[in-house]
Image 1 (spheres, one colour):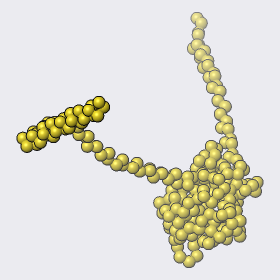
Image 2 (cartoon, rainbow, N blue to C red):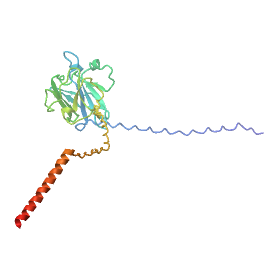
Image 3 (tube, rainbow, N blue to C red):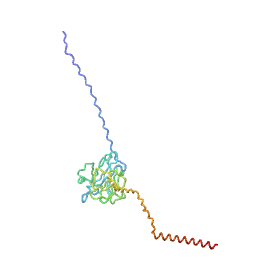
Image 4 (cartoon, rainbow, N blue to C red):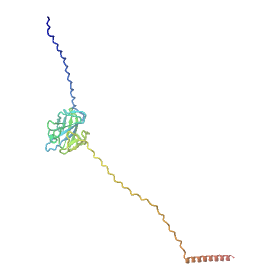
Length: 271
């Protein structure tokens, strides 16, 4: 009698390891250029004379506009006035976008609803504080290339003539945004500043079309009727009175008698 033990266990198959997929490498973003050509970034609007009385440098601001189709990184850029310069905090300007460079957060005192791109100067003033009477602004890229500049009021170091000086609370702004002929006429006095947005071209006032004067209808010329031919009244033949006729007969007879006598007398003389 043979004894058979339990069947050997069925071997458990070894699982095939699932390969771990290699992670997809995210390409590093191409950094925006920190240099530019002259006119790529413009000083589009400035407020050098805020409505505050006394020292107002902490309320001053400058608006920049990117005229290109590419973002521009302003890292290492410098903004200067007539007496001092400041580095612009790291900032990327999107294509055709605006950004405000403000002296301090006092900016929000005058523009509490502002929601655009804004950075603040580290020392709390732009340059040495923008003069209300006249100053200049120079924007340089990271390679110290002057990208834009202007002067206003009694300062003609950049523009001749300089941009106009504006009243307290007003701004000096390009119209339209991005207009750049390097002339003071690019800028207008804006009584209602628009940080973070631009001014459109003014709508020209249509020339009124003169109302034509009503043309008078001439009165119809009366049609002349046929001209009546005047009827000539017949002239009455005068009728000789009997006395006149008798005298005429007598005279005629007398003349005939004298003629006969005259002829008879002549004949007798010839004989």
